[in-house]
Length: 295
Image (cartoon, rainbow, N blue to C red; front, side, top):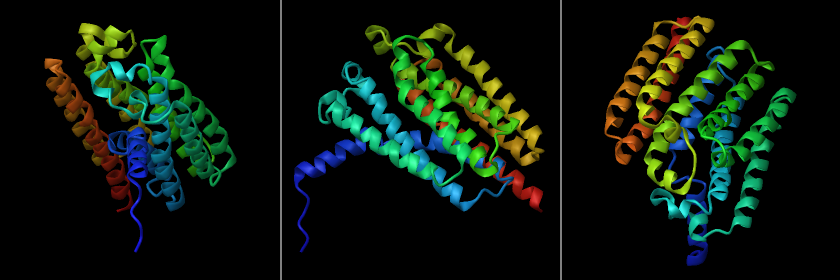
């Protein structure tokens, strides 16, 4: 009969599970959807199974690594914010040096996946590593950490084109721009949850920068996001299903903004979570458009 794990080991594994945010998969989904957009377009509607596996696993690993380095950067801040006060580094359940080791191991595993692609993708991976390792620190000296997060979350799209086509065409940069704008949009909603705590602590964010004009600026970002994806659709010769997906995405984002008029933390957080469906409907539009072309 197999012995049960010691309670200490079970607790330690649970702490690492929480540190990598596997108990909150929304971050994986928000990173995965744009990567799938890029893979489908780069593969002209039929990306290779190999790259689908590599990039899906890569998303899971890099998001976990990003959460670790984010919490390492915020280890002296998270304890002062209600929403993050129980994170393992803030409570001391995981030591900072162990977190750095964990980050290094995860990023090495992710790099091992990249080695299965091609030389161009490998070169681009070093930019991805630099973005993942540095973006959590930008909130110390700029109100635009969401912009850096957008770059970090979007670089995998460039790598997807490199892996599929061994080049990075113009449409890849249009996609990157669209996802960058979308990331700033939804991460501002996320930052609105903590705005009062961040103001007291001195942490910077777009939610603080935008101030009382937050919803107006987010409305502009919504239009820019949809406009950039419209350009992508024109470049790839997308059909009505693609543009119908953009219409649904726009309606979802309008509903989010209407919900956030209260500025309540719970409403802003629900609006943030709803962006999973925005990514899903855009992906469904891309897939459906290619399927219609095949017919």
